[in-house]
Figure: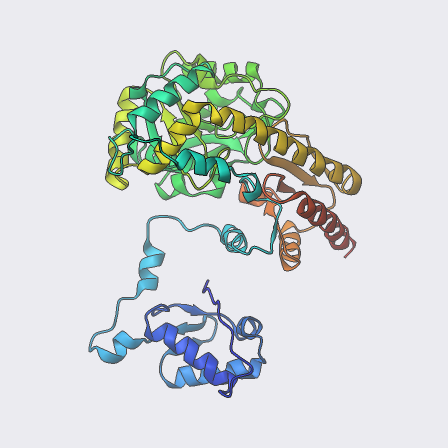
Amino acid sequence: MLQIDWKPQKSSTLPLHLQITTYMKKKIMNGEWTIGTKIPSQRALAQQFEVNRSTIVTALEELAADGLIESKVGSGTSVVNNTWSLLASTPPPDWTSYVRSGIHEPNIQLIQKINEAEADPTIIRLGTGELSPDLLPHEQMKQFLQMEVGETISLGYEEPKGSLALRETISQYLKRKGIEAGPASILIVSGALQALQLISVGLLKRGSVIFHETPSYLNSIHVFQSAGMKLFGIPLDHEGIQHDSIGRLKRQHQASLLYTIPSFHNPTGTLMSENRRQQLLDICKKEALPIIEDDVYGELWLDTPPAKPIKANDTQGNVLYMGSVSKSLSPGVRIGWIVGPEPVIDRLADIKMQTDYGSSSLSQYVVNQWIKSGGYEEYLDQIRAELKVRRDFAITILNTYFSKIATWTIPSGGFYIWLRLQPEISIRKLFDRALQEGILLNPGSVYDKNNLEHLRLSYAYASLEEIEKGLIRLAELIIELNSL
């Protein structure tokens, strides 16, 4: 979808339709809107430019007369010419066809719309899975960036597995979680998403089947799908992923691995019990089914610490463990880690060197300073306290305004409340109505295409005032849509 961040000047002496024609022609002539680019509908353009539809019609007619756009019944209006084809004897590349033929699957339209809306600072973001800018450690970060006299920092590439100093620090840090892993068994990555990308291209073949909880974060990204993998969902209960059928399903579908978020699951907030973690590890060992354990929310417990990671009881190298500071310290630092058997880590490190030649040296330095100094633990205590206040506040609002229209479980950590709506209303209509009023939601269909009754609410990003205002209006919208 075209991004248009311009409006005609109504105070100008130049007619509105000429301003619009000039703007659009410039976009086409500069090659920003290439051949095949779809032009929004007349109605959409009229709304965007805040003019009458007749003004848009006149502007489009002039562009068509210049041979720059063409309208076809049933397929709308698109760019058919630009400066390259006007000046050259051969036509320019049709970049639209290249875009369509790329091997990486595009985000579903709903996710693209969410991503666009998140760039609007006026939007109340009730589904965003990251810490509020107000909670980020701006002042502490400045202190960690101030180096001591005589101290140096690498500004070049780190070794393939990442900064040795950081890997040594993480090795010690993981011992508190019961995980024994030397620096050679740790790979520094640019967040958990890159870890999944490396696994998808470095360890798996096209057509491999990936087991995961359903609903799942994996459905909101296309890392495995773009690499030719197939996702297979296994239901959750209050203790976590239901393990009883894994053995039978593994043999039936020839699954290659299982992906799980045992601590404060995204999107449901479920905390896998200690017993279920052991059962899952046992069945996967028996079936020789490797586990990817995504523990990016594990430090964000609000009531009591969760059970030890599944990796802590892994004595056979069956588990690839992923951690990150993106959810707890800063999404902009982009540092995470994979822990696993050395041959696997060596393979993934080689793939990473081929893709980006290593994560940011500066970010690795900062994260090492945070963890090694003990400042990270102190900061986590503060964040847990802040998130608990926000969670409790959100639950109070839900108890007051949603008791007759929705059900939910109080999460014991993480960012999310998995809200199930009682009225049979269209979640997509609710999403659109809410967005029109400046409230951004994350529908359940983002995490399971068949889920038409849930919303993923986040209490981590919006301010308390925004949470109150947004949730109260959301309740009103649900009631309004249910009465139609």
